[in-house]
Image (cartoon, rainbow, N blue to C red; front, side, top):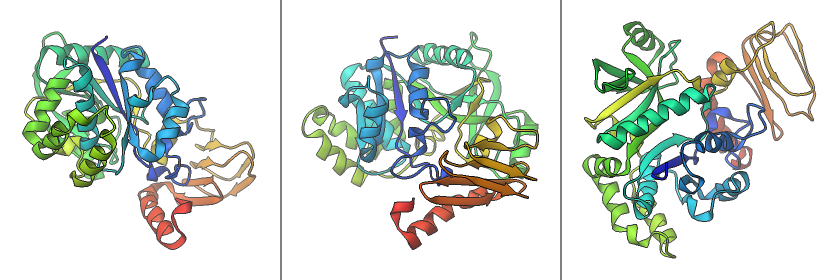
Length: 362
């Protein structure tokens, strides 16, 4: 356990959850599920059984340092890595991996988003431990895959090779292909084939394997961070990171490494996973009334309303009549009403609001 490290990626703005998620306080810092803990706090707590608290690194935008410190008081300042710019997940991981290399060259890494839902935590812990055992013995990049139960177009998919690759793990396969967010027709074909799993975005690797993968597939990013490693944990770290991020390509781990590497495996499991990236995914995972409505708010009255998701702050009164299949969400004096089937338009709404009304409302 002492060699296990967890990198929590917590820098996104969660624009698909607007207007609840805002640039000033994105969804990972919100208690959207009403559990009493934010997504970030749930993620941290989830891995404490596997990773010592001193071995967590939270990579976030510099804007959110105070939120991380407020919500994770056990995390020391040096465990919060501040990104000056958003450059997707590959520079984020390169930064964290090079920091960990100074602490424990023999480390094994779990890399996770900060805003996922896991309902079956015992099963999740079992699979993560299996994954850590595997990557400690084999030079492998391991991702966790979820058996799909619907033709979801908002997730990435992993196609597996049929041959099992590791005799102790019946649910381990070599990865054949990755596909990002297919259309509905293609998603149905994937499910019918039985060869595809949802990409959870959680992956596991030894530190040495991930550093070698950067050298092979994202050489420029690897060299930039390696050359500045001696500046980390010194007063020179902040200016070095600021300069490096300004020069780094914005690219994801999946596209930059996982889709190119030959040593990628997937551990398939069912642990009640959702990335809760959209209002639709929240609707799927919340309890509904007899008419299919999901409601959060102390003062909401529904009349002839079906299949809606309603999120209204407790101070506001809302009366909703005659709507079927809508998102009605209010936050900070902003109200959005949108058909659930058209929620892919929310990013456009956010862009238009920023252009026409300024940054304060997004």
